[in-house]
Amino acid sequence: MTLPFIVFFVCAILAVVGALTLILAREPIHSALALVLVMVSLAVLYLLLGAEFIAAVQIIVYAGAVMVLFVFVIMLLNAGVEERTDYSKLAKYAGLPLGIFLLLALAYWMFDSFIGKQIANGVGGTNASVSTRELSAQLFQKYLFPFEATSILILIAILGALVLAKKDE
Amino acid sequence: MDFITQHPVLVVSLAKIVGLMFVLMTTLAYLSWFERKVIAHIQSRWGPYYVGAHGLLQPLADGVKFLFKEDLTPPGADRFVYILAPVLALTLAMTTLALIPFGPPSVQWLGESTLIVADSSIGLMFVFAITSMGVYGVALAGWSSNSKYPLLGGLRSSAQMISYEVSLTLAVVGVVLLSGTLNFNEMIAHQGGNFWHWNIFYVGHGSFPQIVGFLCYFMSAVAETNRAPFDLPEGETELVGGFHTEYSSFKFAMFFMAEYANMITVSCLATILFFGGWLSPFPESWTFMRYLPPVGLLALAVYLAYDTVVLARGIARIQLIVVTTGALVIGLACLHPVVLAIIQGPFWFLLKVGLIMFFYVWTRATLPRLRYDQLMSFGWKFLLPVSLANLVITALVKVWPLLVNHG
Image 1 (cartoon, each protein chain N blue to C red):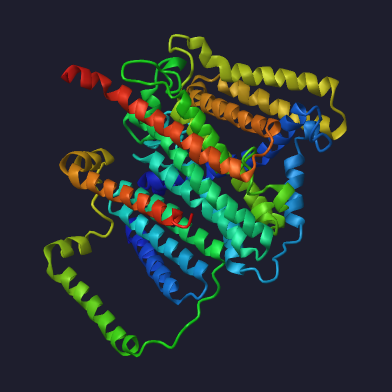
Image 2 (cartoon, rainbow over the protein chains, first blue to last red):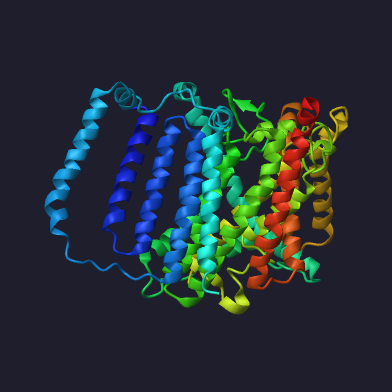
């Protein structure tokens, strides 16, 4: 048992527990916090795989910005405890088998494919971490057009939000 | 011994963490003394005076008081989140300091650099990642208290911290552009030379002085750490105590410590980014400046000895004798060449951090609190455009030589 191995299992279990809490918790804030737990555990997993930059960005964007806004809105609206309707019959009978099927399909893919095997054996990650400089070189040279296109898309989304919010006046 | 040589990283890291925690806890306690004393003197008062000489034992008394107070949980509070909030606030605030280099990486023990806990290649990103989580402590404290003032305080501070985080980050990007790295030690090495080579002053080839960047950074940082004049989340005149109204005993102390830890982090970051981190402000050729730390400590010891003889009475005198001997011993130890070489980096770093902390306290003692709408419009309509303009100008100055050469 090496240290990365232990960290991997701790974080993986935390991520699963967080995901389960997210679905099962009735208080919206608890669900949001569980999602933060999932995000942070995933960030640690990225770190184990040698992707430092992605890990930091994962925390900054998801845990630090998106989820803070979620929590903020939940607090602002003072959202009460979730009310449960009668569960859908379809979900009750089809959900579990389909979920297990998905799990098995993923496991089979991991078992069978070349990349899957690499990933499965690579617990603890590759030691060669991708430097931020290489990442930015890829982003700003090879993939410049998609990158700029995405940023324009985000800009349009921001303007759209502004227009929608200003409508009432 | 076998274990130590086999696991150098683990052992050294643990030793560093324990050492940092010990120093940090003491500093946090004495920062409250420092702040009260400075504000008192600015306002022509004495500040802490009776507990020990110069009130030096006041933090200890405060700590004991916090521990023995009744720990109340308001009825209807969400117990789990209510306890989680201060723990989260303090843990996150202290974790950030693991990434701060207190001295050059050349100071090593068992092949590991000693004066930084985690030398990450993207230290700056991780500091921002951890501080961006800091909002949760405040927001959750406000929400879980089941009381209207904390809720309002929590809401306010979430909005404030989200708003000012934008200009805080943008103000720093200029420095990242100049040094071309996200690693703290490389950033500091980039500013090598004399004090005019620091990022805040340096006017040179493809470099734009970051003085505007620093001012934007500092103002956003004050708002980000919820300190006066931006301390609206607490705002005792309107919100009683803001997000920590319902907290008592040690949980309150944890918020208090988290605030100070955040101040330290922000000051350390300012030192690294704009003031050359652990570099000495003087040129290398001035070798006599290396003796400044021991000489300073010995001068302090002399002053304290004078103080002991003339001013202090009773138990305070015994305490002063202990402090004087401490300063004397450490000062003499620093004269040893090995210690002298190690002490250089941390000395300048801590001196700069201390000056910025003083500036922090100074603003608190001087400026009145802003109104909430003023705070928001200041952040979005002034700080954000100015830091953006600073970023654009820095980028232009940086690429200007390239453009000229191509044209």
